[in-house]
Length: 329
Image 1 (cartoon, rainbow, N blue to C red):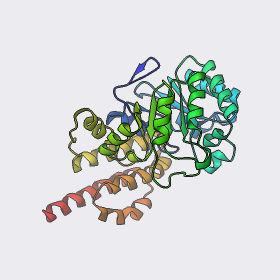
Image 2: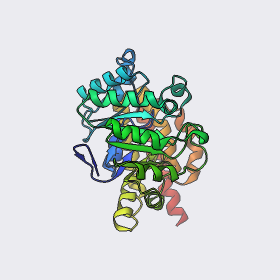
Image 3: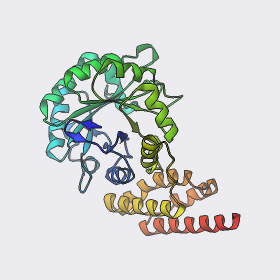
Image 4: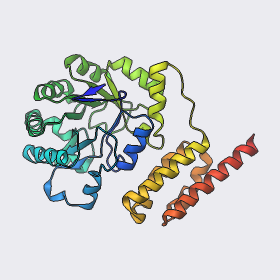
């Protein structure tokens, strides 16, 4: 799989997710098989550029290449400037967000709301592509709602503008994340353009990954929610797609090690206070992969304020898990 001059090790990409695909999680997913990991969306408004949270979004220290940064906005010149700024700060691929369904994004006509204005889409894409000398990619949905699906039109506009890869979430903005993702539109888009097309939505198992690729003819997959609490999903899918064989699930000690490493990186990246808070949602997702009985202790975890106490809680949970497993055996 190739995007611009960059050859990826496979066709599996960690989808950008606001508040989730920070540097620690991106790097963790890369270590567990993702061919590329896209940053959470960064506002193009220069007034927000010096915000501490925005600065963290653009932190790529020690990150594997290529580094892909997603930008969001509605003003073509601001978007172009944001692309240039991120390139100067280490981005090697710029991804444009026209797929976010969040109300606070769509209320300012950004994200998937842009799909309703094809002329503005064209202007933004042409302006951003012309502003940088690195690949620009685009993420969209199938349309604003079921009555106005226009992904094929947007895809043709994107290809003509010089976009080098296109990702499509198989839902409209109106659908948000409800119901099942539909992939017929992605199949039609793949037939309509020659640039790489990535399918996104409800890819949570190796079998589902295979089926989506076969159904859509897509060149690759974007995996978002399927990686929450399960960063090793990339190596499982990669193995299944290449060999038809199932990779052995991670052992309980390995999951223990992965969680602790992730939490330590979050504590270091965000600092003690924010690191502990941000780690909580990841702990909940990880616990969903474990014996369900341990979810009853999640409220106890959410009361923890200190990094070491959070790590101790994880150790105690896995000690109890091993003890429970031995008793059950």
